[in-house]
Length: 305
Image (cartoon, rainbow, N blue to C red; front, top):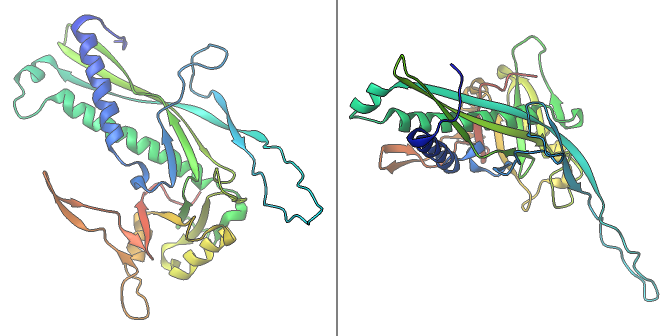
């Protein structure tokens, strides 16, 4: 059974599904909303040659070079004009999607919840996780100059990533919905397709940074320490400061468990759970956990590269 966009009332339902997923996706905080990564729903659906984008298509990303620092000028001297130059970096488009199926009878008889509304919610969450994963995967490939390798090289190492603001970017298309009806089984299949392209900048855009916006620590859980995180942060040099701080630390749950056991000289734990707040659905976390004051993002995809 192929997935095709249908007409009439079914097409309306497809549009509603796409809008529901788009709205739900807009409401989630990608990478905790820390600003460590830029997410833009502005990926064009066609290439410059007019052909549609496809999985594996490479796109060029314009990147303005730093104009440099100010010169001191003598009384009789003159400034030398500098051109603002640009270069291209590349990203590859990935096609991701998810389909859900429900019987028409289930939709008609459901009283507790609408299967399609639940499908839209879960698809949006799946899209969030996929875009988060794309950013983490790109960040793991940071240049070796930004890597503090303390690994045991025995298969039990983990990556810990420190992010500055705007370290990379992900473009994605507005979710496209398609629907098909199986008249024999009396079921509907709805699918959401998203194209996305993710890129780690060679240096964060804007400002005067000359290094990438990600630093990586490779370490087994038993060796994880605050000092190793500080040594890794030192990879940024003087490009981390009060105006351009580290905004997120991404770690595996095993590393998080080790971090929760670390204490400072006064006995206070270095890992602090995010605050719990009341919401219409009950108690939820009102903010991220922190380690040494840095927001923590936990992902079990952070085994060593």
